[in-house]
Length: 200
Ligand SMILES: Cc1cc2nc3c(=O)[nH]c(=O)nc-3n(C[C@H](O)[C@H](O)[C@H](O)COP(=O)(O)O)c2cc1C
Image 1 (spheres, rainbow, N blue to C red):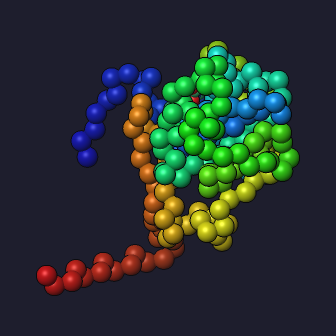
Image 2: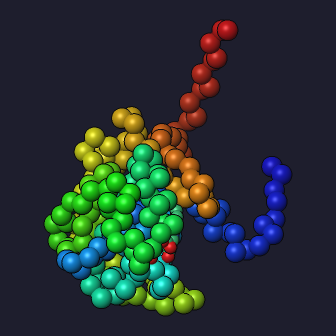
């Protein structure tokens, strides 16, 4: 395999992309807002904890600091333009990103933050702590409720047989989608013989 050295280590994170992009919703009961976050990760499954990295200057960040609440909405690929639009505008200038980008609010079960009705999943989170990392806020939050589209999240896992396509951010306006499951062979079982190709 021919390999290249990355010219800049500041691009190295792109090798770890793509994780599922999330559209974060915030709000205080009077005003709300949305911003996409590709730098998100699970931290612990029990108790359920996630982390997202946010620039402190984002309009949304002040809501998270003040209310201690945020929701991670998982968009399907059909929301691509809305997601990108939410990430290229600020709530400082756009009074209502839901309306501007054709999205709808759904009440959360535990938070004042609205959920994105069109998302295929939403995780309601309460901030546990915010760590300062190079001037950004690493928000560590406890998941207090989670819901997912029953047609796509079955048997405790995402299924891609009914048209689910998850979004993954590469860079700029470039994304890729995941739309299939591949299963690795169990290491203690013999390899499956290669299937002969059908005669042309
Ligand atoms: C695809 C995409 C992914 C993004 N991921 C992040 C991220 O992980 N962390 C972050 O702080 N900002 C991220 N941003 C930038 C914010 O979403 C963007 O600055 C947004 O306009 C902030 O909105 P606000 O000022 O209304 O809060 C991303 C933007 C895009 C388009």
